[in-house]
Length: 126
Image (cartoon, rainbow, N blue to C red; front, side, top):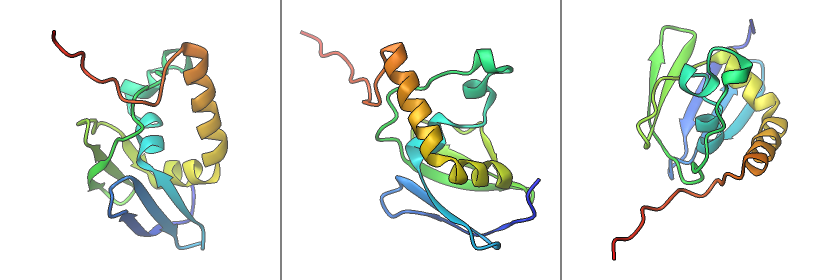
């Protein structure tokens, strides 16, 4: 568990990123897309590493709101209505510290599974 606490959580004006600054001097800019696809929810993470889901189509996802959960986490609500992940301060720090590696792993998983970051557009009726 970290001894650092966030002293700033700020959603960007375009709602596409979250800036988090900790009282130990570390700060990170995390994209809404990374937060969404790396959500700590059971829906995304499963109940074991084998059950983890690669979430495609979230390139344009936005943060709708954030709700504090006790003094240890925040619930982030996304515009696709995903809201079940509780982002602890430790988890957000880990995402920030390992952002580039996590992002590359995500891109590699998409490619391996033939998935895309692009949102799936509904088919047009003829």
